[in-house]
Amino acid sequence: MSDARIEDYALIGDLQTAALVERGGSIDWLCFPRFDSGACFAGLLGDTDNGRWLVAPVDGGTTQRRYLHDTFVLETTWECQEGSVRVLDFMPPRGKAPDVVRIIEGLKGSVRMRSELVIRFDYGKIVPWVRRADGARIAIAGPDGLCFRTPAPTRGENMRTISELIVEEGERVPFVLTWFPSHEDRPAKIDPEIALAARVKRAGEEFVGDQRELSLLNGHPNEEQPYERLIGDALVGDGALFTREDTVEAAWAVVDPVLENHGSAHPYPPGSWGPKQANSLITPHESWHNPVL
Image (cartoon, rainbow, N blue to C red; front, side, top):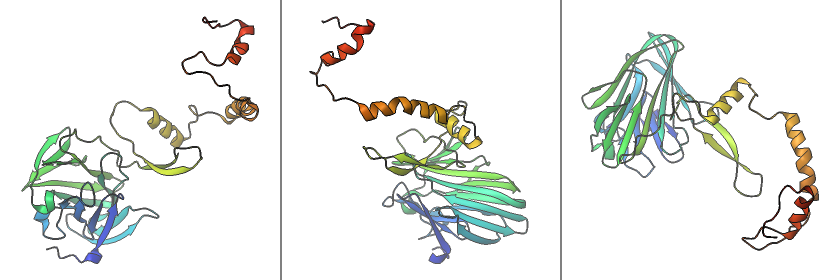
């Protein structure tokens, strides 16, 4: 049983599931993909062999924690003899697959960090089959799959996935764990540094917006996608692909009279060439004629 007290845990989540992060940097509880799913980390009720994910300095240290303003992003700042680092833990609002993202940021000095990933499905009962694929670690057990991605070096050791690295001042190192159904292809790679919120019009006649998360996926790493280009241009202030204000005003000068002074609609039978009144609009110009008439 973990020695941590319940008040030592912070909560992160994506509204469909949640994880408990211990003050010492260990995620000791996580059910994937939903709240009512079996836990893949259950160290809270047992020990490390029941599953957990530790990210912490090798030599330990003292911590201060907080949630970033108006977010569910947990920030843990470590102070140790080698320097200081910040760890950001969060679960971005999901697209198709749920993710846990952990980012280490060097603040001062050179700090030796360690990630120890112990995956045990079904509340610590099942040790998954783990393999490498395109730079990721894939863990499979029955219907559940987990994809672990990080630029840090990884190795297997005693049924665990270990990463040991030195984080320098100003350096940021991400770790992403993504659940997916084991019978499907592994999930698309996300950029852990990007999570943009937007207001999107709700379906219907009323102009009402809903908050939506924009997740930029690295499905084509060598090709810039259209929306990626637009968002990037907006961030740097490049308006070349955006409509100018005078262009919008000119367009509305044409549209406004149509909206305000449109005539009544003329009914016509389905499958026909339209109402007879439409012929009077094109006949004087002799640019098109109805072959049926």
